Image: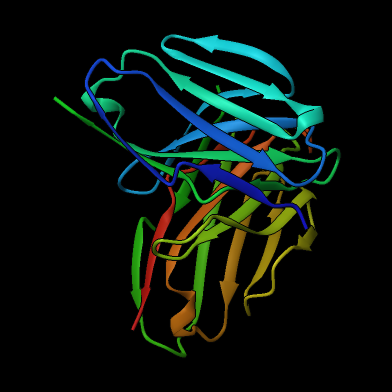
Length: 109
Length: 112
């Protein structure tokens, strides 16, 4: 089945540093969707793009579908960015979104 | 605007007791609906999906069942809970199989 690998498993930054989160997937994806999981468990959709680069605020998502990888760049990290970031891939017409295990980000003052 | 509502927010249930979790989507007709489950410290796993009323596909077998009695409602249930059912249950919707997913706030279940 589809597999999604995220790296690093955890990341510790000082406020103001940039973060680069990686996502690799095992089969051809039609889209990659990034989520932030709140401490209580609920998910916030951050960015979604099937290929290329997309920006919103301090977030940049880059997906290279033919190389089966994607990344999420967080610039000028803030303490409130701390939490778990999940990458999920969708296959064509599968009705399935497969999640990675997540990257736990800690931003310190 | 579309809204997705899950109930209850949390449950503590005894092993062997029945369970019913609900999910309602407002503001969108004929959405694709999904149930996900996350064990503590685990990865989100898709359990079921439905593209239309009365039709549900199972993705992972966990001794649970799902039903879609109305266009805007998705129900997850079991007649006998197991300890392994503990975790966090999330409902989601999308416009189609290749569209972005939007998740509800989830239900935290503890089976004792």
